[in-house]
Image 1 (cartoon, rainbow, N blue to C red):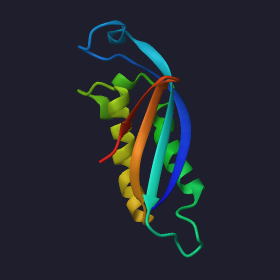
Image 2 (image 1 turned 45 degrees about the vertical axis):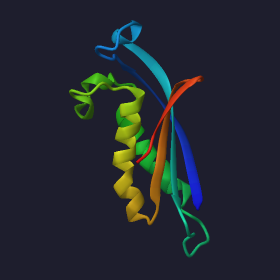
Image 3 (image 1 turned 135 degrees about the vertical axis):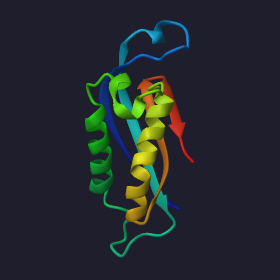
Length: 122
C-alpha cells in the first residue's frame, strides 16, 4: 500500500451548541488539515498520484472554509461544526475525486490546536 499525505491550514470561527463550557461561545482556531490517499499500485509514471492534484482538492475545499463563521455555511446547517464534522465533510467531498484518479481517501485528520486532533476514516 502506498500513501500520499497533504497538509494545509485554514482559520475559521465556530461555536459548538449544547456541549457545555466555553466552546458554546463564538471562538476561532487555526486548523491544520491532513488528507491521506492511498492505493496498492503506482500509476504508469511510477507515482501514486501527483501531489499537485491532492493539494488542489484540499485547497478548493479549505478556501470555502477559510475566515468563515462555520455555523453559517450550508453544509453545517443543523450540524455542529466540530473538528469531527469538519473532517467528515472534507473526507466525503474528496472521496469521489480520489476515486476518479484511481486512489482511495484513507483518512482526514483535523488539528484544532497543537495538542488536539481528530481523524475521520470509513
